[in-house]
Length: 308
Image (cartoon, rainbow, N blue to C red; front, side, top):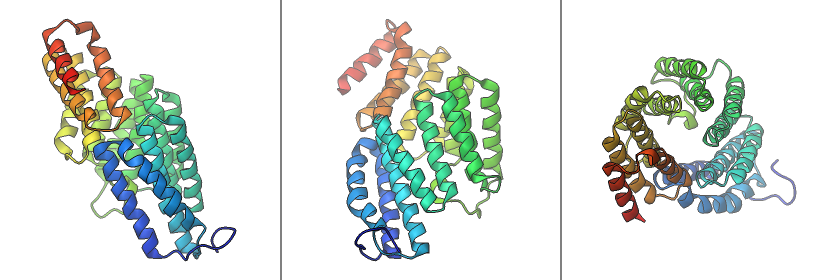
């Protein structure tokens, strides 16, 4: 079968395994060094290696797996574009990834793409859109999805409510996420894309939500817990969480601690190619403005100036 036009090479199980490995590699690069490092090489790989395979020769089963693997790489191309603030481009990749997951007959993965779009909407402060996308994703997987997947989808919805400042809806979605994650068992069949969603990630979501709701005591507790559970390879996630913690400390009037954490995050951002990382730090700096004459803030500014 395969695509139209002159048939390309026969696609093997090994080809699909290679596509998956490349995806893992780019994911790790993105998480540690930012989307700006991974993006161009990933886009070239998609155009020159992955997409030509879709025009190759393959049977139905291999074809579904092939479309699934290319959907995953396409979503990642969107994600790395989103990380460098190329938002329109990111959305085009996400829509393409949705089409490919339909061709792969993988509704669950389609839901993950919708959740990714929901996260982008949160970042752009489009709370209503974020909630809607998360709910469509929930409908896509249905009630039989593994608990970890349910947790991921509920947490995405919670973040949307947080942006809207809807404390009740946010808290109830967070509790659903927490209950779902507690129901997860080591032997569960979990799709590869949901495996990152663990206690550290849930604590991170709680921290962000409480920050958005100006509940700084709770935000600090959850952000600290997330940081204690995350490894150094998850550098960008740690940076975001450090800024959430810095913001919470600032909200609690602990200016020295806030500035120390903020400077740590600014240092990490300077070592990455991630517009999102820079924006997190800038958001923190905007919140420092009312305290700009304090010694701690002047020290912070000197440390950050030395980075550039």
